[in-house]
Image (cartoon, rainbow, N blue to C red):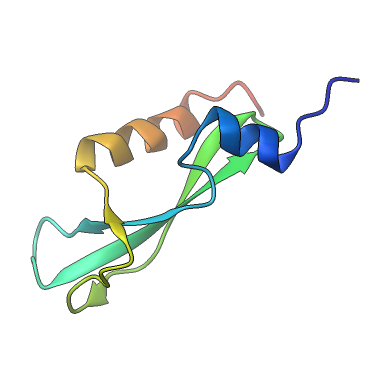
Amino acid sequence: MNELSVQDIRNYNSQVGKTYYVLCNDNQNYYRSVYVRYNPFTQNLQPMVSDPIYGTPPETLEPMSPLQLSRLMRTQIQSKFF
């Protein structure tokens, strides 16, 4: 079998295991945190998006563009896994 370890996946894509933030479009006082994980069943990246959080994002989180988030969400829809 050709199994990938978590470290192999992180070396392949540096987004795996990181948390980002995206500002809400309707109210800039809110943001959502986005955790990116690898789904071994679909072999795709899976964004885990939180509910809206009031306040400013912590400095430890990196911003994620809405375009990048929509691309990650689109891979979930286009998956061939049923």
